[in-house]
Each structure stands twice: as C-alpha cells, then as structure tokens.
Image (cartoon, rainbow, N blue to C red; front, side, top):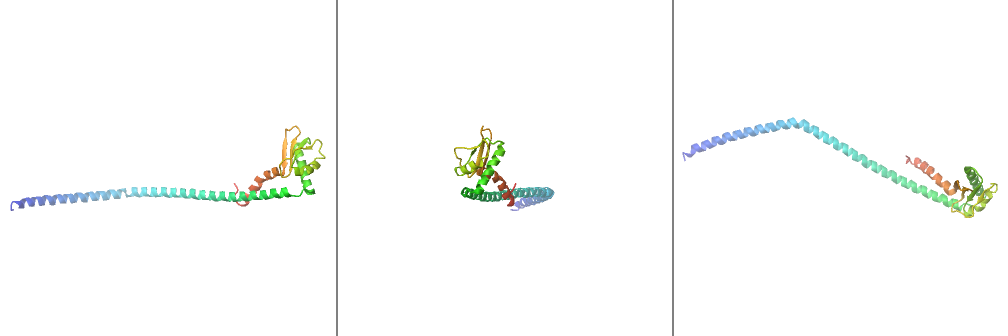
Length: 199
C-alpha cells in the first residue's frame, strides 16, 4: 500500500491542478459571458424597444380598424333605419295621394301639371296620358290647348300626366309618381343631414 501512496498523491495533485485549471477556465468563461452580456445589453434593449414599439403600432392599427369597422357598421345601421322610415313615409304619402278627393283643388293641381308639361315641351301638340281617375280633370285642363288630346288608354299612376309630343320626339313625365321620385333624393339628403348621416 505504501507504493500506492505516491500514485494517489500524484493523482491528487493532477486532479487538484486540473480542477483548479477547470475552475479558472470556468471563471474566465463566466466573466467573458458576463462581459459579452453586458456589452450586448444596449443592443438587446434597443431591439426590445423596437419590437415593443412595432407591437404598439400594430395594436393601434388594429384598434383603429376595429373602431372604424364598428363606426361604419353603426352608421350603416342608422342609414338603414332612416331609409326604412323614409320609405314608410313615402308609402303613406302615396296612399294619401291615391285616396285624395278629386275636387276643385285637385283639378287646379292637374291644370298646373298640364301647363307645366306643355311649357317643358315647348308646344301644345301633345298627347297627355293619365290615370282613369284623372281623365276628366285632364280633359278639362287641356280644353284651351290647341292640338292637345288625352290618350285613349289610361296609365297606372297616382295622378298627374305623362306628356308626349305628337311626333313622339319628346316626352315629359309630370305624374305625381315621377314628381315624388324626383323629390326622394332631396328629401333623403335633408333627412340624412338632420341626423348627421350626410356625406
């Protein structure tokens, strides 16, 4: 066993020296890693800030898109409600016009529509088409217009006249239906503006 002592002592010395070298190497590696980490910290922090900034911008963009989509959907819902209300008002007005008495005041309205149509066409050589209910009022209104006549066949309308020159080259729709249709865009625009839904 005495011969093993120097061997053990040599092994112990080698192990001690190797352990010390290993510890020194590990310590040096640790210090290098620490120094490298410290040196790269500003770059890492800058990269972190850049990523955080981009994420924030992307989040803002998504938020604006979602808010914009929600605002657009709310505006579209308002427009649909207003449009539905407008259509109901026009339907109610049409019903009232159809049910209106064909009295003296109505005859004056028809005379005005006939006169307006003749003026728009620039002639009295006109064939006036009208509803069966308005035939008598239109006949009375054109009595003073030389060359004007009422068409044999009635047309489907709430009232008023559709005028066509005798040669068929020009026409003017002055039925109440056409007048209401011409007014619809203006009325829609005014209502939308009142509700802040314009443009």
